[in-house]
Each structure stands twice: as C-alpha cells, then as structure tokens.
Image (tube, rainbow, N blue to C red; front, side):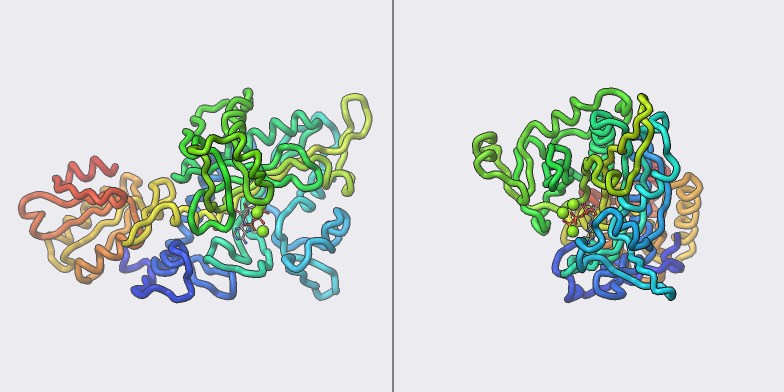
Length: 438
Ligand code: ATP
Ligand code: MG
Ligand code: MG
Ligand code: MG
C-alpha cells in the first residue's frame, strides 16, 4: 500500500476526549472515529487490525473444533420472552419495533437465537457434540461508554456456544475453549490470565474471565504471581485428548475478579510475596450454564435410551474490538503503538527519505515490489514530506519494522532497518534487509 493513496488521517494533537492511552493512540493513528457515543467507524488502519485479530480468533476456534456460522444482529423479542430474559435484561438492551409493531432488539448476545436454531435441527444424541460460533456486532446500551473501543455500545464479539449430551461432555467442550483462549490471546502477544468468575445461580466452578493486567483496566483482580508468565499451550495441542492437565495448571492457583474475590482465602492460599492485586481488562469470558436456556426453550434430543434429554450448553465470548485497546494498553511507548507482528496492520513501513530523487524513488519502488511480491505487507511512505514527519508517523502507527531508504545511504550501498519494539537500528545492504524481512 502506498501511503499517498491510503486513508490515514493522523492527528498531531492529543484528542481531549481520550482518557487512556489506547484510546488516544487509536484516534491519533487514524484507526477509529466516534460516530455517536460508544459507536465507532473503523478507518482502514483500525479495520486491518480488527481483521487480523478476527483471523487469529478463527484459526484457534477451528483448532479447537468449533464451527463458524453467522447470525443476524437483529433478533425477535419473542425468543427472549421464551427464555425469560426479555424483561430482566433492562436498559442495556436496545429495543426496536418494526413497521408491524413487532418487538425486535439489537442482540447483546446470542444464547436464545442459537438455541432456537439448534432445537429445530438437532433431534438425536448422535448429532452431538458440537460447538458453533460467530463473529458479529453486538449492541449494549452501556450506561457509561468510555475508553474508546474498550467499552463501546456497538462492539464486535466472538461468541461460541457448545452443545453436549452430558455434563461431563460439556466440561470437555469448556476445556477446549479454555485452551483455545490461552492460545488466541497468547498469539496476540498478550498475557491473559484466566480468573474464576461468578457463575450466577447455577453455581459450580465453570466460569472464567480472561484478564489482561493493565492499570487502566476496569476490573479489580487478585491472583498468584506465578500465573502471569505461564507459556501458552503449543500449536500441536491435541484438542481431542485430555486437556485437564493444562486447565489444572492454570486453575489450581488462586485467581479471581473482585465479584467473587475472597480475601481470607487469598491470604491463606497465596504467600505474601506471591500476592498480586491489580487492575485488569476482561477480554474474554467463558461459561458453562447447563440447561439454563435449553430447559425453558425446550431444546432436547433423544438420548441413547430413547428418552428426551435437555441439551447441556456453554457460551464463550471474546471481545474482538476491545482487544485492540487491550493490545495497545499492553504495547506502546511515548511515540506510539508497538504492534506485535501477529496483529500489525502492515509488517513493514518503507520510508522514502527523498521522494522525487530519481535513484531513491527507483530503489524504493524496487524494494516495494520485491517485498509485496513475496507476500510481505508493506506501507510505503512515498509522500513528498519531511523525513521527521515520516518517522513520527511510522512510530505512531507502530509497524514492527521500518525500512529507511535515502540518497546518502544508497551511495554507499546501505539502507537502515529499525525495529519498532526495541528501537534498534541497523545499517545493512538492501539484499540483507530484504532477506531479514521476507
Ligand atoms: P464487562 O464486564 O466489561 O461489562 P461483560 O462481562 O458484560 O463485560 P460478557 O457478557 O462476558 O461481557 O461478553 C463477552 C466479552 O465481550 C467480554 O469479555 C468483553 O471482552 C466483551 N465486551 C463486553 N461488553 C463490551 C463493551 N461494552 N465494549 C467492548 N467489548 C465488550
Ligand atoms: Mg457488561
Ligand atoms: Mg464482566
Ligand atoms: Mg463477562
């Protein structure tokens, strides 16, 4: 992509409305624009990162055996009356009437809808188990939308739903998502800690929030320090095998959010020097809820003995759009964003130090062609601008590598390669630079 033809409205000033660094940087880097309170337009740079995050979510869902579908954003109120949640959900639900005065709503989540789909099609225990997911916009009329995409009203969520015959099987489905989440967040360069969360009236131990530690986080969290740096489960993890050791390792030490935190237990179980109390961002939440929806909505299958059995279900959410904010909170410096390579909008920022100089232009074109030809994503700053401004822009938007080409270097056969994360700069031949990037 040539910057001269891209759409990158950089703000030089700090926007006043942004209270936290990720919000500030997303606005300054031209990634999002607020259209109404908590409702954002995703500009090209932000949109590219959103798609990268989605892709990682997809790959890890597939690895865990979940299957993608797509449900609509608008739902019929009748389904929610059936489950009993329509009245209880309160003002966070955006309620709409169509021209026939039918009550509709903009989905804040999809348990009812997926249960409705599944109950129509699935008749036998032989069709189980399966986990379906979609990545779709949600709307919650948050009382205080703030911190940019972190707490929007319209936001993108991955929500998966598992369907099993027995509680034991449902526990296995839960474990698959648990491990998928560790990999998903880990691949984005995040240290997500699963923490026990409130299970509501059903009880049990099967609800975890995945938390990124950050001072700006809205949750207060408490955990054992050793949970922070555990390695992520490997790519070849066998999701059909026994995942309980992985889950055991992550859940045997104390970790809880403020809603269910038990100070006495925390002090009894965790030695003082290992106690971590901090703030965190909830980027995911998984939940086993048994027959909470299949019961009132009569989602049943015929069991092996011919009797009707209610489906055992769980739901698993990832805050896809919130993740952009969380990643920036975790990875930035005074000059701007530092994207982990896995979610970077482009891998390389190519800086032409003297646009209009025939040799420099030619060298840049050559490199640009070679990199893009090799499948490397490059943002080429081909504009006729001062070098200082170009450097500042590249630092701000946080691409992992900056390749700087100018007339002086070219005379002695070198270019400069800068690593955005470490700040390290290296002078090397063009070929050497290319072989590092390809
Ligand atoms: P929160 O406690 O932050 O309000 P929640 O517990 O209400 O979140 P869930 O119902 O568990 O959210 O939804 C699953 C995921 O969706 C959350 O873990 C979070 O990452 C994301 N999410 C929820 N609300 C928002 C929002 N208003 N803006 C952006 N992402 C959100
Ligand atoms: Mg909420
Ligand atoms: Mg929450
Ligand atoms: Mg939650």
